[in-house]
Length: 192
Image (cartoon, rainbow, N blue to C red; front, side):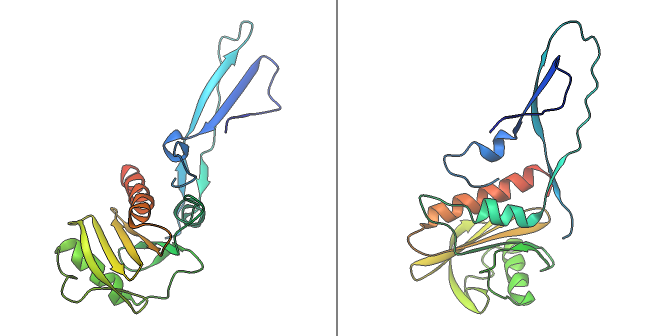
């Protein structure tokens, strides 16, 4: 939603809106210790004869936890993922939902091995928090998908992290894939 910055001279109005890549969806989804900057779209309305204007903005910072809470755990058709996390390739947790299972670093190492050597997890299954998921079709080197009963897991690899989403009915595998993979694609576009 666009907003007006108040407190500026009456001759200069500045309107801002969040980056449309994060907020242009039919639902409210997607959009280490560092934060990520979100750019602002600006439109200026000038009145009278203002010849020079210098405007400086500090970038808006979003913590990794915001990405999990607001974008991965978002509502889709009245439902949301069961759990989600952003985890570094080394197994360090950047952010996670409160419901995300406690996992072992060798479970993350197994996922990383499957990204580097597609099919690595097929014989044994994907484990997370001691739960075994049957590995199903994914995208070699980029996405691992797993199934367990009426639920499952989607894992998307980015340059520095893996995005993990766990779902159960009534959420569908396609909805989980969409949320996790869009977040991963966005982070890849940002060089992360």
